[in-house]
Length: 104
Image (tube, rainbow, N blue to C red):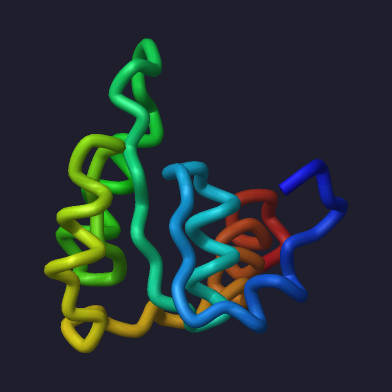
């Protein structure tokens, strides 16, 4: 894709999303309820994306691979094993923040 302001429309139409492990990309896809294959870029220094990808994989929400194993992952994937990502609960954060700043 060339730069887009939003991928929301593309995500809604997708049957499967293959993405890097950026937090925004992962969470937006999972919140849309779409199956996700996260491709880890092993060449990044201090690869902070790896930690998120591994945790989402351990929790059963995504399939994980690197560039060299993407084809194998696509050939052997079983999307029925993926668990739905739980919806966000912003009210819990708001309650915590209110408590921290003394509004409660």
